[in-house]
Amino acid sequence: MGKLILVRHGKSVWNIANIFTGWTDVDLAPEGIEEANIAGEIIKEHEIAIDICYSSYLKRAIRTGLIILEHADKMHVDFIKSWKLNERNYGAWQGRNKDEVKREVGEYLFLKVRRGFDTPPPSLQLTDERHPKFDHLYDTVNSSYLPASESLEQTEVRVVEYFFEVIIPELVKGKTVLVAAHGNSIRGLMAHIENINSSEIPKVTVPTGVLQVYEFDTNMILKKKYKLEEKSKIKL
Image (cartoon, rainbow, N blue to C red; front, side):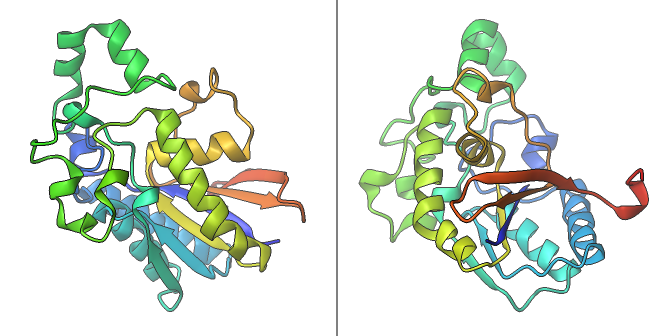
């Protein structure tokens, strides 16, 4: 059985500015580029043979994956993108400063949406230019599939569906798979893979640029989970 490596994209310009990003297609900040550089060097240092890479449709994840492959000397591998690996859609909160939203709605609702499991943010109106149906990235996607907002639970459903349909068949072939995605899409995968219940998954945080490796038995039952780190920092 192959290995699965999950990595949240490096810090984006809106991460730095403390803005809800969601499906907004913002780029990496310089700090995020450096995080991706380091992740690629770590893969090279550990001599891991990446066989295939997946990312979302969003440039911060795409660029993270490409930078990692470049620095790992794996630019030849197939690179596949899917909107199902996108970040959670933050609806009407997208593009807004997180502190301002918290002051407006109160800490209880803010945390229930941001750190909860089944509470979505306010939806985008169908006429709102931020709605993904107006984004050329999704021209080939049936508009009925495009969310106006999402809870973590809804994000998990689409990500896990893609995991079963596309990624697991590659793992079964013995391939090592790199997935460059987002905090909430990765949390959704982690919830499924690690069997984390809905009351515990909101407490899980996914740091940017950190390589998380999963190894499975022949029945796709998790055997081992660990983080890849620079060998010089590993205490023996």
